Image 1 (cartoon, rainbow, N blue to C red):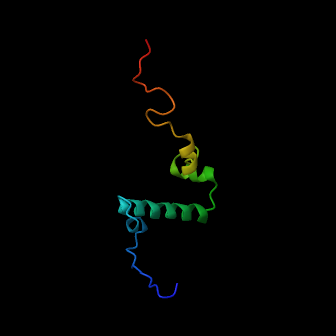
Image 2 (image 1 turned 120 degrees about the vertical axis):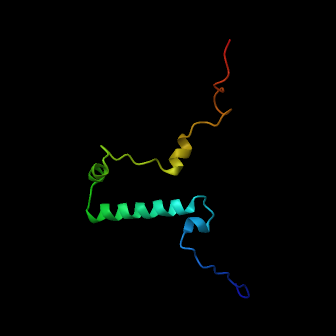
Image 3 (image 1 turned 135 degrees about the vertical axis):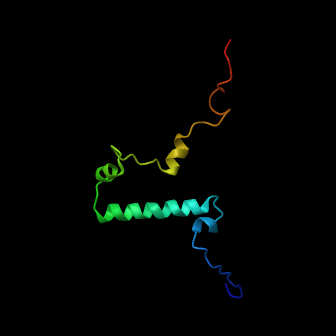
Length: 89
């Protein structure tokens, strides 16, 4: 890439703000909190059940991956099945 200059921009320290995510400060705070929980669980060598117990949950139920959520999402209004406002006579 001879002759092309690269534009380098100093980071704000918040990747969510850098890519324009609404509520970026809250997103960054939640991400930092999740990292601290991860480090604590790893340091104490908790099993999933032990980690759930510390959180006050009976069992740990992981959220489905984004790809799985897309596959299992309900059809949008007007897709797939008749709308609920349709009344059969």
